[in-house]
Length: 308
Image 1: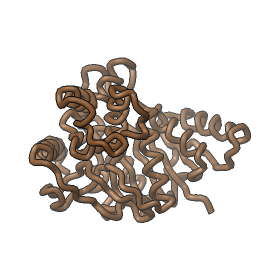
Image 2: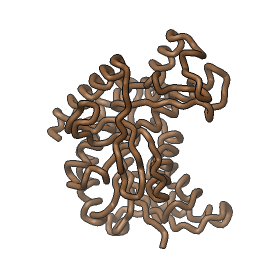
Image 3: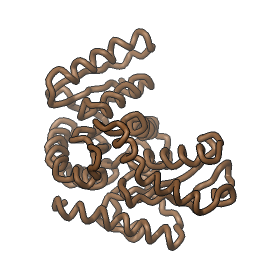
Image 4: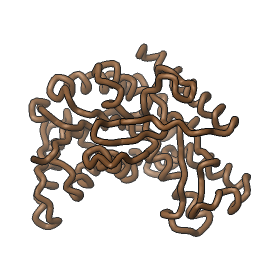
C-alpha cells in the first residue's frame, strides 16, 4: 500500500511539491487549501498527467481535512507569501494563526504523521507546530537548511565554474539573514574552499546566500521561491519514506545540542523512517559557533513574541 502525503496549501510551493512527488511516485497526495476549486483543479490536472508521465499515484484536491485522514506525512506550506521589502520576520504574526489552525486539523485527522514545516518564518512556525501538535520532536521538522545549502552550493559552483555536484557545503542556523554557511565544512571535490577562492570572495557568496530568498522575492515582485523549496522537501520525504538515514540540514528542536535549548534551529540531522533519528553535532570554529548562537538568539526573539 502506498504512503499518503497531505500538502497544506495549494499555492506555488504546494502545487510544485505535489508535481515533484507525483513524478517520483513517492506517495498518494492530498492537496488541501481554503480556496474552493484551486486544490481540486490543480489536483485533477496533476492526476491527468499520470498517463503521460507514467505514474499511478492518486492526487486529490480538497477543502475538507477529513480527506487528509491517516496521512503518513504532512507538509505545511500554507501562509501569506513574502512581498518585496518584507522580511521573513514580518510574516510572523500573519502566519502564526494559519500554522496553529492547520496543525490542529492535522493532529485531529493524522495523529501519527510526520510533520514538515515550510511556512515562513520557518523556525518559529516549526516551533508553533511542535507546541500545538504535542508530537515528539523527531516527528516535527522544518525545511530550511537543504534550501539554503543548495543556494550556497549554486553560487560557489558558478563562481568557480565547476559542477554543483562537486560542491559540498552546509548552512546551519535560522532560516533568515542570520543563517550560518559553514566554510570549515565546504569543499569542492574534497578540496577545502579557501584553497580555491579568497576569503573575500567567499564572504560575498555567504552574504548572498543569506539574502537568497529576498533576491528572488525582489525579482518576482508578486511571490517567493518555489522550485528549489519544493525540491528540498522532496529530498526530505524521500529520505524518510525510503529510510535512507540521510544526513541533511533541517530545522530541529534542540535540547542542549550546540549549546542551544528549547528552539528549532537548522543543524545536520539523520532522516529515516522515524523522522529525525539523530541530531549530528559537528565541531565548529569559534567564529562559526558564535554565528550559530547569534542565529539562535534571533529565532528566540520570534518565538518569545508568539509565546511558543
